[in-house]
Length: 347
Image (cartoon, rainbow, N blue to C red; front, side, top):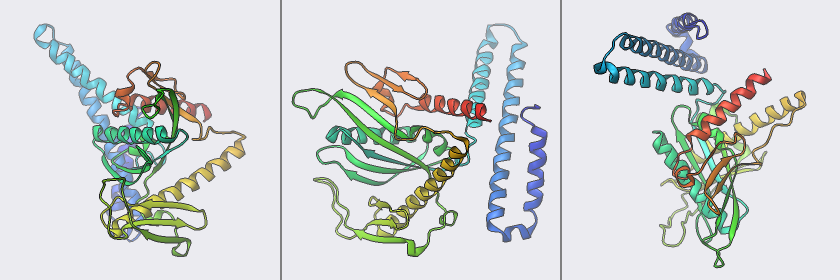
């Protein structure tokens, strides 16, 4: 009870609600929005604790009885208690500045030619399957087809609580080792794909983007052979002139929708760039060199054996096909635990 500090959270929530009851506070949109989000977060935290306490009391109640007729009740109440504890443990790890945000995930084929483009499409499917399994809203906002197979690149929006907190573990270079289906000599090939993950900033006001700093172009979006080809210039390309960042969006039906999605991508990347610069300044001050996302983080082996290994946490699984079907939760949990441990050691 002391570690959770329930009384303090209840008191803090009461103070915020009193503040929000003042009509004048709503004149400051940003402040009222921040207070509302904080109140919602505190209420959820209090509800979780009460739920845990209730489940624990339920478990203790059934353990006071004996006999086969109550064994199932004891087992079920125990499983429910463990499930709640595990969920609270994971949520406790998701305490970063942007962990509760929606996420934008971009995939880019790297070295490896057509194999890399095929691997990029495999990862695209993996993340879409992960999002669907975890009940997130998944929106493919941009996709560029590959030369012979697969894709050159793709951008996906994941919407739902903590989607960025979980997906940030995927940032980095992914490596695939397999017998290439595109090699007539059936030789083993190694290919690479870059995955970039940023919090999805949907409020343009959160990042200052001046109209004179952006160049907006429209063009005709077209798919690979046999796919529908737009007959209007519905695709949008936005260039941020000061930084040179270029974003495109071509998957929405209208030019307006593509422009809106492209702006979300741009401000999210600009926010990420700003955060990286701040982190670099801190590292210079501390004299540290943090590992960048340019280093391979995970290897998927399909030949001569099957295995997926995360090089940051050393977590590995033999079921490569299960992982590519979206079962990446254990990799994410291990990453969050490692991140939390390193953070605590640095404090």
